[in-house]
Amino acid sequence: MLVPALPLAAEKPLNVPFLSHESKAKTLIFFGFSKCLAVCPTSLSSLSRTLDKLEESQWPAVYFIDIDENSSQALADNYAQQFHTSFNALHPSRSLMKQLNAEFGLNIRKGNGDIDHRGRTYLLERRGSDWWLSKAYNPGPISLALIRDEFI
Image 1 (cartoon, rainbow, N blue to C red):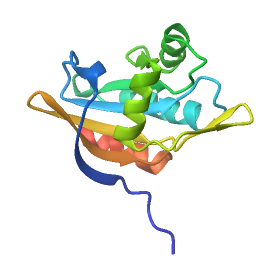
Image 2 (cartoon, rainbow, N blue to C red):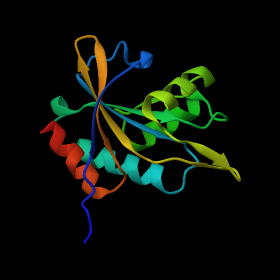
Image 3 (cartoon, rainbow, N blue to C red):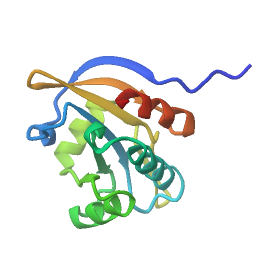
């Protein structure tokens, strides 16, 4: 019997300094890289379609975090904007990436010119002045339908 791809529930405060000026109460974060041929374009396209099914007032903030240390902020911006004009991008410094890796438990592995990553989408919620990890969604259409349901 197959187990449905339910989100992984979590309740954990996070230190995410790049969200300090974010005005939306909910944020979706996706860690990936622009040269990814599988998970990243599929997930970001699905996130874009998910947003387009919502009223603009329901949209969460969406952040693409570029995990490729050989990339740049300009490349990250360009990549994210290809999928949706409302998507934000961040190419973190090495120290910030190390912090985010620990905060989110990313388990990023590099080898043979490729980057192996989980491809999860993380839902964060603002509680007061703090950001909390609420859920983590594994890649796939079932999970993205569940993401949409979070904002309806």
